[in-house]
Image (cartoon, rainbow, N blue to C red; front, side, top):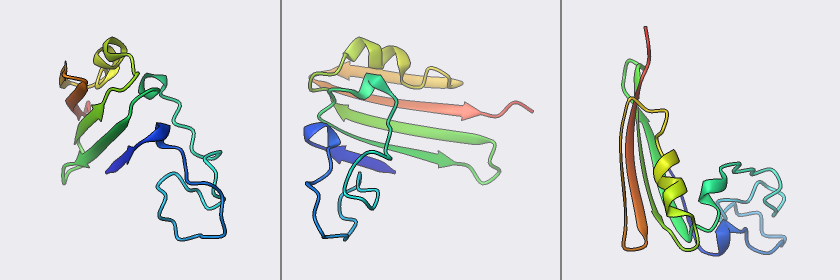
Length: 106
């Protein structure tokens, strides 16, 4: 499970505190090593997601929710879970929720 909220999930200012309380803190106090690479999430004010695997490892289920902020809602709607076997995406009232299931091909 992963989540974040606020100023584009930017880490706290660099300090001597190495408590690890900042999710994006990679030990150096910066976000340099945390490359999201998923441009559709740019502008999201906050999000939470999870990925769960079944006991056999043949099926995975992903859940995602976000406060849209300045994000492109249609781009998120098109891309969330797009590679899944089954998916549902709901966009409205400044929020997006998605659920997807992936199954391995034997």
